[in-house]
Length: 237
Image (cartoon, rainbow, N blue to C red; front, side, top):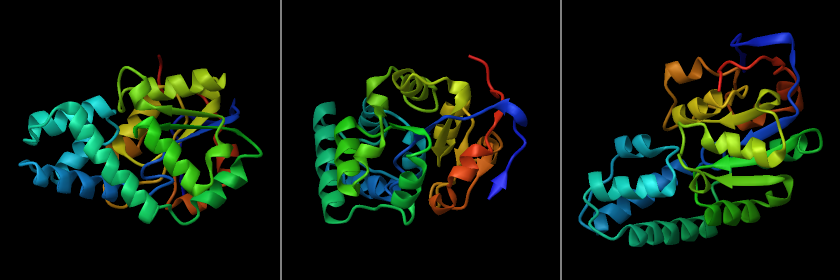
């Protein structure tokens, strides 16, 4: 674990709310999304690479669907692209939910002490399905999909919306993020950032510099880590 000096101060604002990302934080699902998109694109005359996956991490559904259509040669109506990818993802989760080791324990340990929300770029239907399979839905007071805001990550919209629905101040909130776009979105919303770098699609060095805490895995996420995040906002509005 690394605790950064990015705005941190022992006399700063105390965190009372934690907002989790889902893909790459609770679920080791980025490789699943990558495989599903690769297979779907290939089956419909297109292509999908690791670089395409990195390009759309954090994007909302209209954004990544348009990307598959416009940049990857998937010549289908947008609603058919979305529906086909969703069917494949739900089937994959039903067979083997890729829950990170320690994720359920970390959320359950933090839930009694902090308000919890979830801000994910996955569609709402997939978020709800995955959380139910994981047995974690009851831990989160608020769930927000990037599909419900104007812009996906790295824009700050989804984190601002999550804080608004929770009745939480961004300056008293901390996200748990794994990707460059997610870290940027949270920092731009004025939140103190806990980063758990994605093991496959690692965030950039520049993005990690914005993190207040960098952990090796979600198993390291504890109440004590959140308590250490007394700080002033690193970004303005």
